[in-house]
Each structure stands twice: as structure tokens, then as C-alpha cells.
Image 1 (spheres, rainbow, N blue to C red):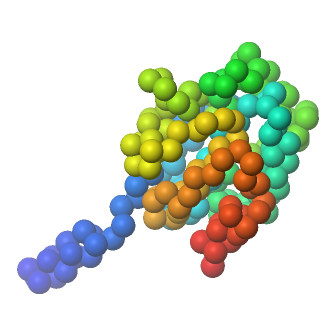
Image 2 (image 1 turned 180 degrees about the horizontal axis):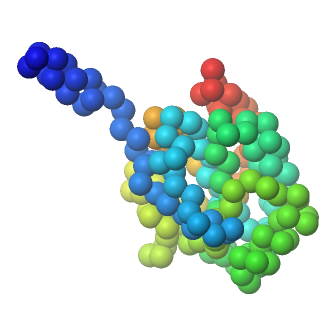
Length: 171
């Protein structure tokens, strides 16, 4: 009996921790988006802004959401940290729905840098030193909760650096 417990403890300690766990975002639709609900699946978190020149990437993010369905979380995090977001959540939601036919999960308008940064982004900075330098920066979280990559605005979501890595995680 003791040997069994020792083996169980060793296995539990050797298993990778869900490093991205414990982070909750307030949904633009109300309620919460809890990253713990996505444990064991890839998660792509993208800080967005409706009026940014990179906003065309919403189409690619929606395409990934449609393609991967509930096997991957594609999460848009609207932020006005770079002064290119609309005034409130209602305006953001309406603009994204009408302009991009967006149905993927979105958070409320959220800080992604500085002293008021959401705890996810504070953790990201602590773990990697990465702080979004502009809108449409992307963070790919592996199924084990580790940070699989951080990408700047020019990196297209549908390209091999992101979509290709997600596909590999799902194999």
C-alpha cells in the first residue's frame, strides 16, 4: 500500500503543471472565461483592438475558431492600451459582429500591459519577459499549460507559426 502511494506521488510530481491555470477573464457577453476549462487543449490568446490596422486578422482568428471548434480556445482580448479600441464593450461586440461576423470568445476591454495588466499578462511577463508591444500580439499556450510561443502583430494566425503549431498539438 505504501509503495502504491509513493508511486502515485512520484507520478503526480513528474506530471507537467497546468502553468496557465487559474486565470479568468470576464466575457464580453457576461460571465467568465476560465482557462482551467481548457486544460489539456491549446489556447491562443490575442490582444485585439477594433480600430487597429491589424484588425483584418479577426477574419483569420474566426477561421481558426471555426476550423478547430471546441478542441482549441481562440480568445480575443480587446484592449485600449494602444488607444485603438472603441469606447465600451457593447460597441466592440457590435463592431466585431457586424464587420467580421465574429463569434469566437471575447473578453471585456482589458489591460495587457503596465501596472493594471490582467493577471494572465502579468504572469506572461514574469515567465517570459514578453509584454504586448502593440495590438494583435499572440500567446500560444500548449495543452500542458506551458507557453508554446509569443508572436507579434505581423505574425498571421493562419500561418505555420501558429496554426501549424496548433495542428501539431492536436495530433
